Image (cartoon, rainbow, N blue to C red; front, side):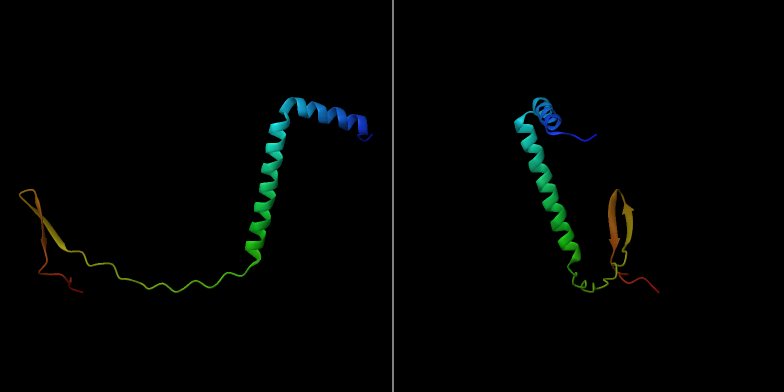
Length: 84
């Protein structure tokens, strides 16, 4: 038992009445944009990506000696390199 032409016409009229012409047009446009985006994503995935450039390792700065004196923070810069 398949859908014949009269059944499809009635179904189309019901959908048109429920959603309206503008909403159906908007949904089909969104559907087309989704398909286009999917195809672009598949094309981007198939292209080989260039290797990433090596990054330089920068050592973290050595912590300075800090103290609080009368509510003011004092930094001792005389010992900039901690003993190893």
